[in-house]
Length: 192
Length: 192
Image 1 (cartoon, rainbow over the protein chains, first blue to last red):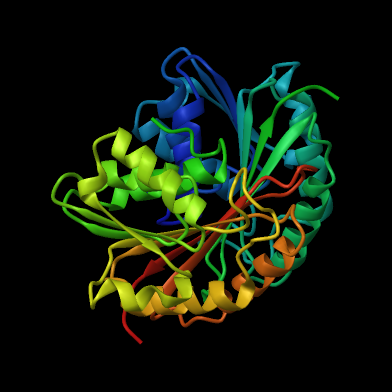
Image 2 (cartoon, each protein chain N blue to C red):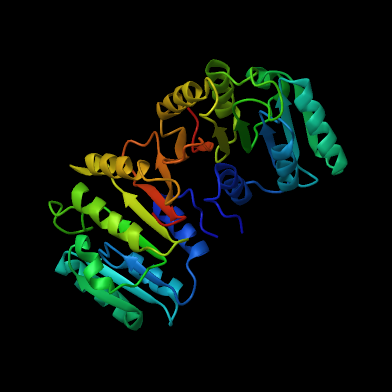
């Protein structure tokens, strides 16, 4: 059993374990090095589908390499684009879950980071097209330049959403000097 | 499996399920109607011990009735006192876990509520005497008069604790009009 209190990623994984079923369609809006894409590909099984996006070619290449290695690329559609354009690639599909991992690419250029305006726009689209009953996890970082501002903008946006549409939850650490990531979690409970 | 996102109590129960073992000694610092005491008595098993405190005789009576009904009173030591005096009753025992449920007694006098100063003092004592590796859960309420102030005082106190002593985590809801309870979670990782 996952120790959910270990970190925000283990908390998000626990939620997805509980709520994603074999055959589901899900979205990895920031695939990075592909670790979360791999996790999602395992959850959706051989009849499921993972849309995995990233704006950086290095991320797409890493994710491709990892999923190919594991023999799971047939479950994954890789999209090199800004997640603000995600709707163009989903072709009307309603994902059951979506995962956002904010900040910069691990081992990549730390100047290329997710930004409040595009993150919020991508979230807005994802919430609209997500299946009712679906989940969105957002792992956020406050230790890099611009990270706290992005977290504050995103959480303010989410806190303003109607509770007839979504339940918004937050998990974070209060006394850690090294800024471990926190988690924003969205459960879609209805339509606008 | 518990759905941890259902509410803060289910989240706290999941953590305690993972970390309390048969034979452990634990503390219910605010036993109220006894539901958490009953849950803890189940977790610690027949060789474990639950210290259950409350300042109100109605709470002690409810808890006694419930645990007696379930045939589990032999695992429970009931203490009618303010939890600010908890050390006097623990006799040097180091509990593995402690549970605080703030606010007022359900169905009781809503003027009798937990207070920031005594809650913080009781937490301070509990953190000192808790076994290293142990856990404290605090379910907090912001919907009643004084609730938000108590939450803010308690979370400020916890955020100031050194990370060599405890890891402090928080789980809360961001967009709910009816103020569902949140959870503060403390993992003791070392001694002062």
